[in-house]
Image (cartoon, rainbow over the protein chains, first blue to last red):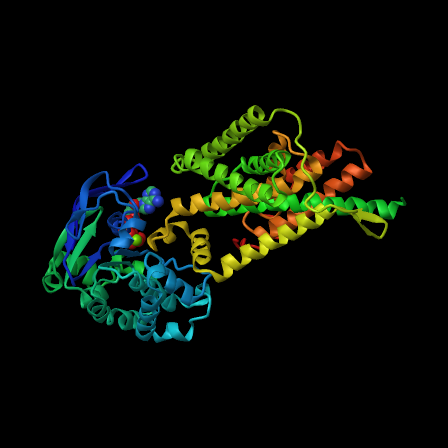
Length: 248
Length: 293
Ligand SMILES: Nc1ncnc2c1ncn2[C@@H]1O[C@H](COP(=O)(O)OP(=O)(O)OP(=O)(O)O)[C@@H](O)[C@H]1O
Ligand SMILES: [Mg+2]
């Protein structure tokens, strides 16, 4: 469905991704984990068209979409929910969700209303706050809103960048437990970038471990749970650097 | 005329000028907030409107046709500037784009000089008739037009941003340009249309002021500057504050010109600009965090 092939990306003058190859198939949930500054957000941004790669290709639905602008990729179903949620604080919950459907709303308002209703059924908290400004929501609610607006875009691949950021452990568990169901219901695949490796592994089919701009491990999560490097760096008893960052 | 009446008279003419500045300033603020471009060709769109309207009226077209065509031509010229100058430079640094808009303004002034010459063009008032008398001072019907059109435009703007889907998309773009693209909102499309609207409203300002001041090829430069000063007084990111800033500027200028000497109006407005930029760069009414649009 979506694949990065030997992707090399610069942020400013600095090389951040040194040839990353990764793919996600239809209906699959793939986790990308790694320490701060590994290039996870850069990878998602590059997939979504925000950072044109210096080399390598991005394939989406059988087409080469390298260098295509994000606003065009959204229309094809490649939807990024960026880091730190980035909802529009001065607009209401309803407006944020409806703007998620920006590229098709005018053509089919009835369907947009129906999809809005479905999303609100998935996130009842949002329905209670439908008329409230997004800026006045709690972190968890804003994350639901960010994901909800992503679904409103009718994604075929949904890219989520650290949805657990700043959320209480219980909220994370609750939110993540719904990802599988959402993917099935709305027919989308998902790439989940996470620092919370345990939570990500609970919901993902496969995972990639990204360190300093390179994929150092990949495979089904069951296999990675046994991998000594992954256990040592991300799943060990002592809180390693990668997990301490959770406390941010 | 006693001193009180004179001050009232000066304030009323300041209001007219203020309404014109306001229309230019709102165009300025809109373009700046949607595209991030400080468009110093803004006043030239007003000049285009004034010159077009006056030229057509001298050809004997009905006044309302002249006004509509003036607004459309100004909008088209603004759209041309966007496509020819701003769009190709969208990846450039802000300073480069500012230089380009100044250059575009000079080019437009040059073109206006070639087409219309140096002599001011006259245009009839929108409404014939005696000026209205208020407490000994008089107010032109044209001033009423300026104020009413200014209010109507502003009401339409508020409606657009608060009530329409597209208006909300534009606001989203203002709040977070990066995120807006992820929603599929095309910055290049918005940039084009905000220039069209900004050009139209400046053109309207020009064609409204033309019956009072006449239309000259070089009237745009001062209007650009005054629109900019008004926008800065309002903090650059708030259209309503820019309108207030514009009216304030118009009245202060008018008082300075009338009570001191004719040279002082511009001096005062640029002193005001410097003071604002040095002391309150985020606007006279800014709170800790500026609220945008
Ligand atoms: N706008 C930028 N300009 C220059 N360098 C940047 C920029 N954004 C990020 N970088 C650099 O790119 C590298 C990777 O950043 P990225 O945000 O992709 O990491 P990440 O894996 O998402 O980290 P985190 O877990 O903290 O979100 C970092 O070294 C960072 O300093
Ligand atoms: Mg990140």
